Length: 220
Ligand code: ATP
Ligand code: MG
Image 1 (spheres, rainbow, N blue to C red):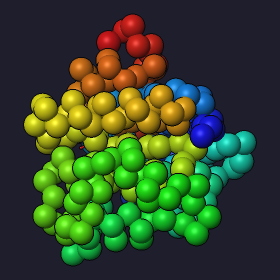
Image 2 (tube, rainbow, N blue to C red):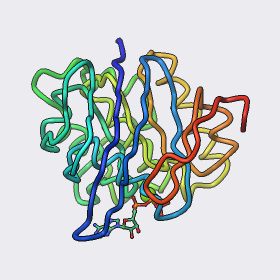
Image 3 (cartoon, protein in one colour):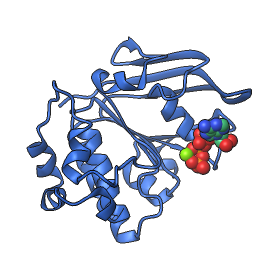
């Protein structure tokens, strides 16, 4: 599996009249884990949503795998090799674990569900359980597994350990390390500094819709 580079330059986004992203620029190189930090409301989730086509950019460039993807529709991102685990995880409580995985899988997916279960064996044991029967940590595992079913070239994760017990945080971090070692680059929105230190090659700090700081792992 090989990763692809993401580059966003001077991206702007609005909700109604509110100018939320005011010229965000960042890049993720193949094989890198890059974290995006910042206060509540700084625009971190909006940045991931704009890259994913869930929010329309009002200016700037978004390039992924050498192609312009600004203004892409959300249903097209999987086909371009991008994957997002959103803040709310988006697990369907009335669907089983297996159905939650299948709804995300494209016909031309590079991964079978057997591949997914090899990486997440606990999910296979529970594949006939409903999404609502999973704990918060298990739902997050399922959300990450689902983001991998098409074999993405880049994974975006929005606060994947938020609200989880420390032991579960360790499990999710181990899972993300495994994804990193498979060569998939990761753009990670994360507030937990211990998690950033463990995972990030570089980081950016977003303040009021602008990148205020860019740093290396050594600076945490
Ligand atoms: P948090 O750390 O709380 O998750 P964030 O950095 O991810 O914060 P965003 O969710 O990107 O922040 O929100 C940025 C700003 O945009 C906030 O002021 C928020 O209130 C506003 N906002 C977010 N979503 C919407 C929406 N759908 N409609 C209107 N305003 C929104
Ligand atoms: Mg957010």
